[in-house]
Image 1 (tube, helix red, strand yellow):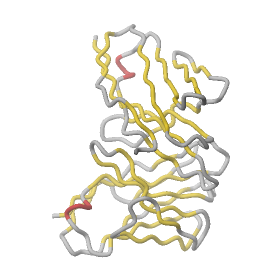
Image 2: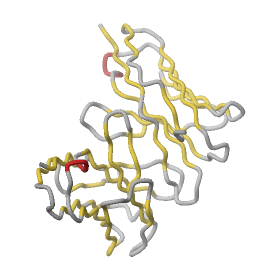
Image 3: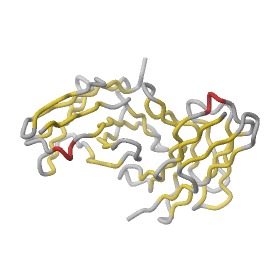
Length: 110
Length: 112
């Protein structure tokens, strides 16, 4: 079983739409959670950390549900520039090894 | 900002060649990682290092080795390149403060 599972998409949405991604993780001892964004042929870049209390950064909101072992990312008022692949990441050991989902592809259309 | 530099963006090597992929970070981070990324498989951890001269196998170490002689530099070595090692290789650095990884820009390796 994969450590982290994501719907690969693609999610095709119009500009201005609200879109949500979920990701599930298998290890209940997971301690750290992140969303990364990866543009085509580029390296992943940290979008936001995910805290137990949930956190918001502008149009982006991340939530953690430990009981059900999933994290979510909500994007409001989608922009064309939000088109990318979004990677869910969890970590649960002292070396901070990260386990990546395969990514969810988002296409925002005009 | 942390900068992680990978020496080559694109490489083409022949089967059986020994290949060195270099990675340098400039923020005195303890932890460094090598991943490969393949379509449908996501990022998979090859090796990581939490200190100079220390190395640990990741999930797919076969066919690879690493070297960390200095804190800022973490090298990935393909002892005898094979076509199934054609991939995007990503180096990452992390400071141990739960702040997430910073990645290099990646090396797209093709083995022919």
